Length: 515
Image (cartoon, rainbow, N blue to C red; front, side, top):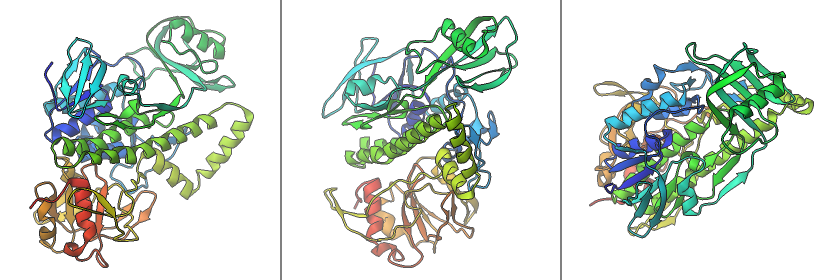
């Protein structure tokens, strides 16, 4: 096998998205995938939420998913749907789409970008030094890469080989889900009793019966068997309805863990390799995709020598708290899903609270990912040697800073244009909403890296959960769609050329100025 600048272990949604991000930046990247083909057997994710749709839209591929998916309100907490139809986003809904189709669509996009996927190959170990990583593969080869990223799931070989702790909590409950055949017609629909939740459905008219049943306690830890499924069904119904066979059986539980560090020098983790949790709320796939979009442009700038490798530390700083919050909310949902009279009473009270406007917005924003806010800390001066010197420039940061940039309908000299269209190439954007030409001088030392776009916008500035925010005069947008800096219409940011905060933000995120 030949060497590559970046090797990605794992060709699931997270690995595919990261490969696409790196390819857009012109980085030589390859995916190592143990499966011999794209086929995905068994139950995995069944869709994703609004912020993930936005992320795909930022790359111009959202419609590929939308046209195949069920467009619906998927934002749920402890089993209760929270409608986000009134949220100020172009995608105020979720998508129902099986992971096998999500992977197929992503793989098609990655193929278009020219990324090789090397199948039937597993990473068995690695050794890293100051110059790169030697990756040991199951075929006996040991290619070199500047960086190795583990997107290889909850049992990540990369994480274990790096010695990164996987801290958290063991499972308290376990369930089986399967596509099976029965001699007798089962009891259709869902059943909830003291054992937990079980049920039967037929989501595909041409497929088998979808069976689900909670196991006793935390359940076994090995691969599930037909006997395990039979026992779980009998616990609820007193019969297994003549269970005959199963095309696949998947065991899932609420084990909850997070990597203590997302980076060990030249090795990084993303997706389930960095965090696992209960599937309640359907957040896992989206969190992994957003990990990839946060990491991709940063890793690209480092390997191309645009930014120092300390930029990669911001990946952990920003994404670790996001996943930690997901872990906590899924643990809360599992607790609220227990089947007993006391939990039933608590669940009723929580449901009443979530009928109120502010709690609904808070929880829906959290589950959908639309409320994510990266804390960039105090503004900093960056010396020529790249060392940050903290110096307050604006004690009251604009509320947009660290949050997702809304997909506004801009007016350009040659007609209307959406903000997300500007992000299709995964390049940073300085959006100037003031007089044309007023930003060129200040941006010129970074003009080779940052797009300057002069536009106007007269509509409202409204963010999900947060509400209305002051209209800015200029916005510096990172490739992941988050706002790095805001120029105010009045105050210390009015004169961009004199604003140290602007040049500091450019240097911090997009490397030192060029002469």
